[in-house]
Image 1 (tube, rainbow, N blue to C red):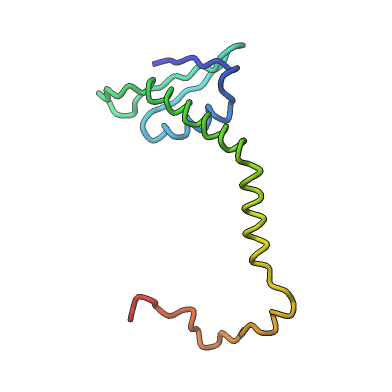
Image 2: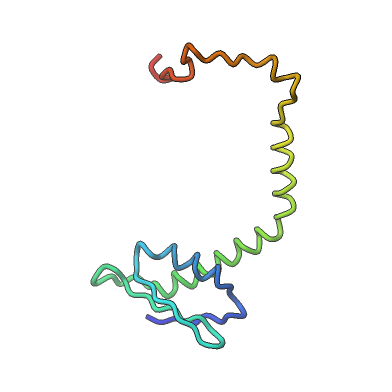
Length: 114
């Protein structure tokens, strides 16, 4: 089965992410012309009646939506990440209070053995 996707609707990254999601189920061949990407899908299993064209198209929409949400929430994610990293900072005076003796190998004990 062959599917055409307009380049103005989907990015190349979206196309490759979607293709990767289907590599375990089908063989994917990509091509392009001036206006669209051309995706040819062949099932790996003989007799497989799965409608990969519809599944692939739905996955393209899902991936595009994920990208839109990621772009819209990028600033918030950066702020949350910076806040999380800032709360883990150890100041020089705090380092003196940390017990660095690990000669007893207590970190190597089996926590589930008890």
